[in-house]
Length: 560
Image (tube, rainbow, N blue to C red; front, side):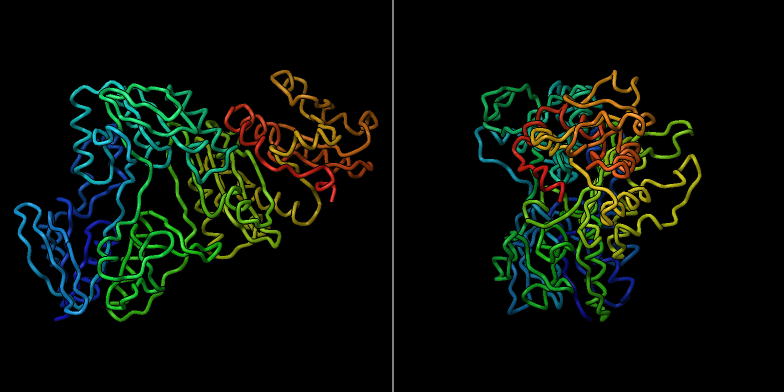
């Protein structure tokens, strides 16, 4: 009887075990898990802390007993594999309850040890907690029940924001400390600014561009000397791949710090597989190695490993890093590369911002969203981001599917998407991204980005506001000239020579203005995303600071 031993019983490891059983009833499968729980919903842990998921047991999808009964798996919790003997095909297992050790044989070995939280080396950090396991959740829950009034979450990534939201739900005064100059690094700054407004509007204290210096008995001290109250400190800085077993066994580890695997998830020893957060993945956009700690990828890798062990040569595909998170009232979704990364890589691209509604605007409860599409000059979709109250998940999923299938940006306009006024629009927001991208790629319209506008104005361009007077009364771009769109044909001679950058609220009416101006002989461009994108970014002080650091394109560059 062939025997597969799996190290790690969550996500990738358990997917391997259950899929392998379905493929081979007679295979001997042993799962060794360091914690006391297997096959649990770790993405739901923050929501139990906040009371959204009231029943703790709802997170425990399977137990060793249920897995033995249904899948005939030998699952051993509170057990840790401490060494791998590749020559003898053995592992040494330690019982964490009694300290005893024993050896276990294997024909195939699957490593799914996950990742460990990053813990900064600062005074007092032992008081801080991380949230990775059910035990972590229970420890934090016990602290909350003891009467926590204030909490500081260190790290503004996906998990950090989920923890912050759920602590806030408990009536706790929450602070977020983020070393970067924005939360949610996969977002570009103008969309992150929307999240900043939401967090601050909910009463969350947001400290950006500073790190943790000390953990004090009831507070934390930051690197700028600020002190924040903190009965509870939660570390959500990020994770590092757990590779000790692999390196001790002489398996290859990549430059990103994760275990190196081939297209079948085999390590440098073809008898040993590795899946999940401990493994470096292949980035679809660059074919470089990347760390993408997402549960859906780990589950998919586990399934493919089981197929390969069972003799089905199914190779995995590179990954786009599609992800979504809820931040209080907002949905925030991403796929592919952001503009920051494209700029850092020196990769040419164009940007499209839109602000459609989640469904037909005339139907009740339509919510406006912010979408951003990043496109290669050849039309390849490089990435997308979305922030809004509703409908973001649908659009990001459609865009991720388009990227997977190789659909060019211009063809987004041709996608036949479900439409009824309570669900979408006759021209879905994804279709609209395709229309705008097509206009830019064909040369029918040029665009100026929000962070370029000040430099373009300084170079002599005129900013033209084509909104109605009522809209302008609520605010306008400094130095802009106001001519309502419907008056533009009769008043265009009032405009000075040189580049005219037209804008409206979101970029749609100004698209018409640019067409009119071009037909009348003016050199014109559209402010991408309109006043809403510009205002959302520049009204956030951190976004202003970032914009000043950018290297702007010149008016001459835009004219070309």
